[in-house]
Image (cartoon, rainbow, N blue to C red):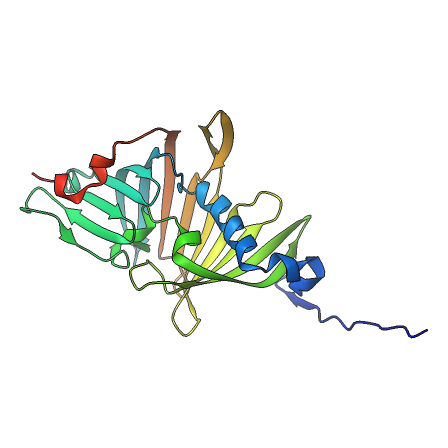
Length: 256
């Protein structure tokens, strides 16, 4: 009888043990359909609800020592979102409309909405798309890179590559908890694979949909990968599941 011993490469990075994904059934889990399903679950906790939801965002930024704060009301349904600026007063009345991967901006001084990019900087470390674009499962092609053992949890490390230039980021490295199925942190990458911005997520909110209570994002912190003092913190409040008429997502209905 022959005995085969598999050699396993173990990497220790920042106190974490990085093991090959295959040790945890990664060969099965790595199937695209399984990864996409996991992304869909994590997307729902960040606002990607098919039947509709609303919430408010307080966005506080520090950039080169300068502080700013903005507030938004968000209404989302499926692939669409309607975002209205509430504060400060100089931005009140500004509107962002997301239709699938297209995005429009309107303010009272414009005659009609104009097309904008979700990649454009809104304020601080936050891009336009960070406000309401939460559909990683729809917008990116996932690949399971590895699995990280962190305490008593296991994190799936997934590389996401953009399906279109219309999405907010070219590439994202995304950590999802096996226990909660929620996104824990992310690195936003250049085309060359270098991180230029980091994100962490908290889920102290909850939302009830279909009679079931589920976790919902409470905070997203965005940090410049080189200049750590440059950061934006998005605080989510008053999340609730509710239906919205399709008309509010029709850019032709956005007028002065």
